[in-house]
Image (cartoon, rainbow, N blue to C red; front, side, top):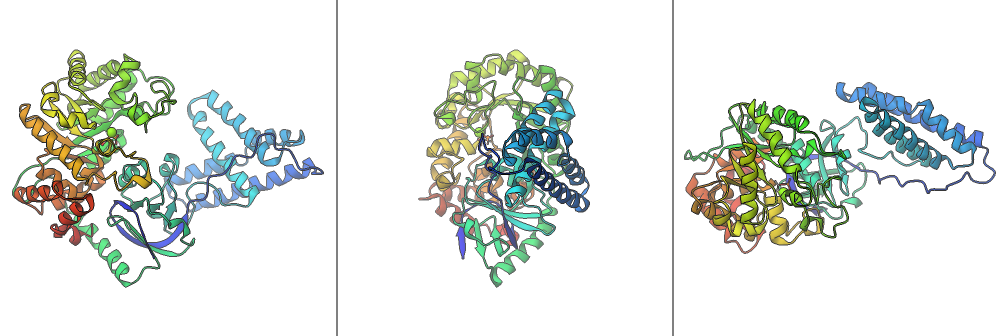
Length: 559
Ligand SMILES: C=C(OP(=O)(O)O)C(=O)O
Ligand SMILES: [Mg+2]
């Protein structure tokens, strides 16, 4: 049986599946020990569940790779933590149910660790992880989080939480398929950055039996239960194309020598170093939120400058485009955004937070300027969610006041694409954020699986907005236009964007080789012809198919 979803990262893999266990429900507040239960016996039951969790983690640590080993050993120790078990024991003796007791005790321990701060504060997450494992053990259900396994498997889930994706080990998880989520969701973005073949919005996959063999095609967006010869052949071919991609030299160009620098999207210094190692010609989108996330106060200018400097250091002599803070909607920040807004995607987000919390943006620009001073990178700065010309002018003014030379705007709101000729007179460049541009042009929340068909950058309306931006940029004095949305990572769409006249393409570093290899297989006039086909197509699907069928390199690479 074939399940159709949306492919978000190419790759063809066959393996057995494991389902993501259901998240563990919190034991009800006020839960008491069942009448007639001996508290001492209940405590003994808790201790043996904790010991089983300890032994399992310890055993997994003996088989884990170096970095995972230490984490598992530390978590295993938590399961034996006397503070946790004593506190839970006290609650049980006072009549609280066993599951509830360990739940509340862990809350207390986690709060104490957080209060100590530093290394100890980081252990608070381990306590909560261990608590969930102990409760799962008591209930006789699988432990929450990514299933552990000695053998590689394909992970099926409804969707993944950011914490799950952070612990995803790509040496064991070979591919990912979700029944929910959209192509612009954070699960999709993370799958791409890990280089993991992935399909999202594949309705019905929850019915696939645990342990059965499936085929995942992350380009076509299909999951096939009980694969046959055709799927086996396709999976084998994919394995050989990886070698061709490995030989890509890093220079973005068409076959006739039209240069289109291939840049990387990064979120921190580690990403930047990895991108440089994969041959990125610079950074087209430096998402600065990492420095602000999981904090309830604003980082100081010096803290920010140090973090930015570390990213710039990976690209001496190269362009690095910094995006100022994009808080709100899918990236809430407690000290900047209002969580009670009825429509956060249409709310105070991105550049607009400067209206409600003035000062944060100016301090961030000072930090960027400070980091630029002692760096060799060519630093450009752009604001997210700009909608009008006066906003662009205001942002350019703030950049000038901070001593930053190259201000730009992201084109994420259709109004800017429609008036690009005017807006771009105020700044030096534009960068198309096609993830948001698509959600706003199509009025389709990028996080929603059922709207994935609308939320597709191949939509002719979105491509028309790209074309209008390029035309406006020319009229405003040949301003540079890049693309930094996920669309640039789709090799066929990257050809179309090049044909539309975009100057640079920025993507997750893992996609550089595929995009560069396919781009090199066409001349600029061919790319322009393909662009016309896509813009004038009656539907996104027909445009995609028409373009893909004229790019034989895609099939050759199994993309
Ligand atoms: C690059 C973009 O920004 P983000 O995905 O961070 O919203 C975009 O919207 O295309
Ligand atoms: Mg965006």
